[in-house]
Image (tube, rainbow, N blue to C red; front, top):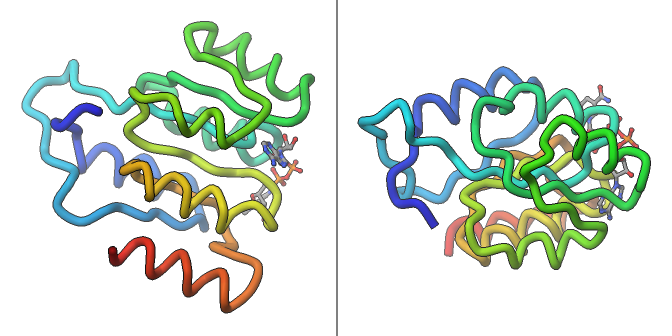
Length: 146
Ligand SMILES: NC(=O)c1ccc[n+]([C@@H]2O[C@H](COP(=O)([O-])OP(=O)(O)OC[C@H]3O[C@@H](n4cnc5c(N)ncnc54)[C@H](O)[C@@H]3O)[C@@H](O)[C@H]2O)c1
């Protein structure tokens, strides 16, 4: 994983995405000195909102795309042909070069994607809600704080 990433740019871009949640592991993102330093991003859920989110981070390196819908995945892959494609987000998160994940799947998957991504050292932007229950939300928080 890249050690040098541009924190300001990532925060600016993810803030522009709207009402989602940005989860950043403290102390990991560092200000980049070169304009060539970009985040390697995986987009999980690339349909409606996910397509908009992808557009907001299109200037980063989009290295992975994941969706259970072949139609939505194909549409995203057409825009980002260099990205690897997945139908299973667990396999997507095993891709080693991913710095950050943008998650816009359906609500009931958010907590799982968040926790798996953070457990693999990846930063996460996730559409709301963070989780589907208080118990799930607590697990996401605990994973963030670990
Ligand atoms: N649409 C909005 O304006 C809006 C605004 C704020 C937040 N959100 C949130 O964004 C999320 C997505 O909303 P949407 O309107 O784009 O929904 P959507 O159903 O149009 O898109 C969800 C996408 O995720 C894919 N997906 C579903 N389960 C998946 C899985 N297990 N693995 C991989 N891909 C999977 C679907 O195939 C689809 O492409 C929701 O959690 C929603 O609450 C949406």
